Length: 100
Image 1 (spheres, rainbow, N blue to C red):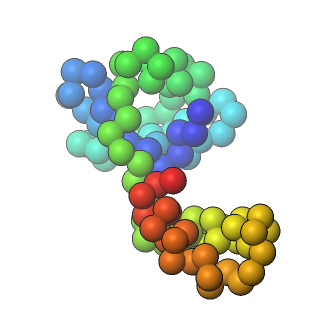
Image 2: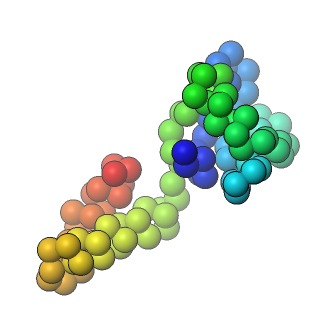
């Protein structure tokens, strides 16, 4: 389960968290109301998400993340179909912006 750069809200709607960092055991999140940092056991956080205690709002991607993802998609298309990256970049940018 990918937890990085996602925003989740509690089922009661009282607070929202933004996952800042995540490794095998620990996830660090920021409470968006109070701006304080909260640490979660990753397995426990994944369990809370699977049970619906925390619900994903929307993945948050910066413009630079979108561009990096677009170039990645374009490179993969070149490897798969051949040609030049610039031929695939327009379509890959649309895909990256849509979150595919």
